Length: 268
Image 1: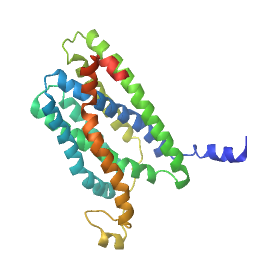
Image 2: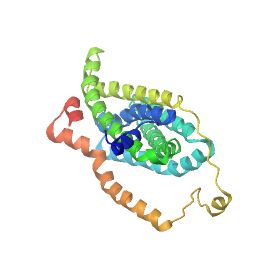
Image 3: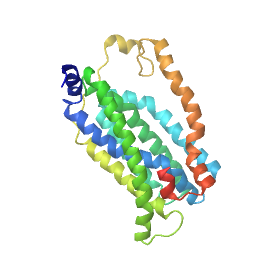
Image 4: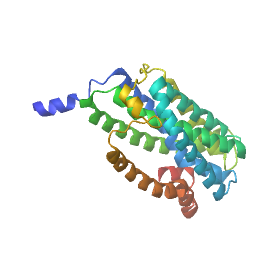
């Protein structure tokens, strides 16, 4: 094998224990979140929640994520990324169980907890990866991480769509919401499994800011190049404007337009 290719492939190995275990964490948590985004609105529809209320629930969830993002970043510097990830995944697991009764007040509390919990995980996971990989490993690690995430979402969607209706039938559960009750319970189990894998990770030390950074910090942020910072923010902001209008109701639209059941919709 050519030396250059051998050296390139070697960068895919030699990851730290934390980096390897985090891939396992990403599988469990990624499966939970992907199933939530695919099927939660359909569950709401099945228990009689109208589209306007669904829109408010989604907005409330996103607002909770916005409000928690910066505090999560600050707290992760103080207490470590691992602890914050554990808190976020615990919130997600509890939120999913809160959805099962179908009570409106619990739904709003649940989406707020899930929005906050998932955002905490998203905020700290990339800094955690950066802290547990060497600079020359990161391109390869992130490519593996993204590939695993995409594969996990695909497998979770197919498995969830096929197994939930079958499990509901086997358990003697009836009604339009029955498969979604099974699905949400399973997703909560996945979130709890992800929480368990976090405890296998070694604790990462808190980040201690340099004195100069602490003086110039605003809202817990230190931005050395504001122009670059804005250039990084703008594409995500524009993309999110479109995604925010499309994603929350795409599953509801496809189901209503083509009359698909849960299994077929998840396959799509």
